[in-house]
Length: 240
Image (cartoon, rainbow, N blue to C red):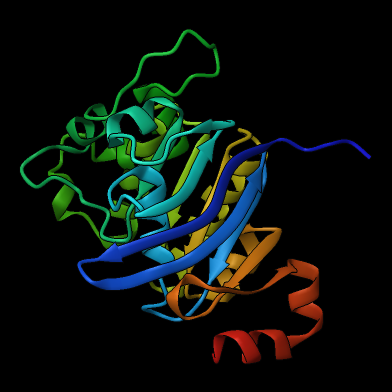
């Protein structure tokens, strides 16, 4: 059997907000070109996991390995240069800046012919091209989500951390986001770690799922096929 490379690995991670011990011994991994989700209720530590990987919430102990390099407690910009892009649930579209200006904020030039450029992002997201001069913060929630993903792509990442992409979106817009993310993973070979409370979206995007309980404790790991075949797993671990 072919050995698959782990491009992202979290080992026994402990993270705090002040005195609150949010992640207590979290371990997980994502293989090259794999889409993986973390499923769990609000407040269990899903977003903290993402923030610890990207360096926004440095862990007190444990390790984060990216492409085999220990990046624990690195500065955010150094982790980004390792090929990691983070799309937060809040999207963080900068008001007063146009769509194009928001995109160019994270631009990283690459020599690869497949590299993401402003024109290539506009090809992927035609709605953004049509609104390239519009203030990004005045667009709809779905359009802002596309802008946030497009801005992440401008850094030419190999790993994308996607936090609650369906948050606040209508079912139609959720379906649109699913189509975009699947295309990025399958056609463009991105490795994805997805955090979602909407397990239906996660099942359509990811092939493997970590079921997170309180304090970031992994209560189970399941494939999409296993979750579809046994709805009791969702009920037991996620209470949804």
